[in-house]
Amino acid sequence: MRREDLKPIKMIVFDVDGVLVPRGTKIKQVGNRTTFTTKIIARRQIEQIRELSRRGILINISSGRGLYMLQEMFREVLPFVSLTYENGSATWYRGKIYQHINSFEHLRNIFPKLKRVVNKNIKGFEPKELIITIHCKSPVKEIEKIVKKDKKLYTIWNGEAYDIGIKKDQTKALGLRKVMKIFKLKKRNVLAIGDNHNDYELLRGTGLPISADKSRVRGKFYVPLEGKFLPADNLMRKILSLLTSNQK
Ligand SMILES: [Mg+2]
Image (cartoon, rainbow, N blue to C red):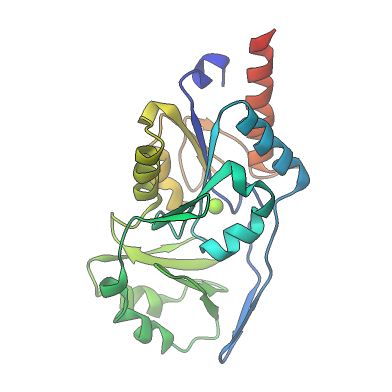
């Protein structure tokens, strides 16, 4: 990546898991009791996000996770970011919520059917408002079969969970389009980084797509997932150094 590539960029969109924090969610559900661990972004990333924001770059966090969890993870940088959650379903910005899609009628009938599936590989349903997320130790064919019967719905297996939502519409690309409208940006003004299948539409919708896992999603540039630094760390260091060298 060169300085010229960054010239039109006004916003950076970050996926969360596998990009800003390591992959993997610890979740356990027994009857009505759900327990899970919240990850918080590291000090270094907090500083990097603040620095980018100081330089006038907008930061959007786009995740499959729920808003309550993203607010906890990004508590320290909330004044500097917008949060697009549950695969583009809605966006939080400075306390205001923009809902991008209403999935209620689409998902309400399938939810009880999925709840009835008994399989030792199912770990639990992650609390969500607008999509359905089921954590599993490995893929569960019965879940896929149930969802497939409804032609309007998708399942995405991300290696640790299924996300279920409305095909084509309820993706991170929807969130991106709406966020671009809120901030009056064009495709060429946006750089996005993601590592997984649910980032496909998001990356395609930006001028500068960056992949953190070539085996799952393609980008114009590639930042490795393995190694000492998180992909977001590597990317932000690179961008900040390019922006700084320009000033000299
Ligand atoms: Mg991810």
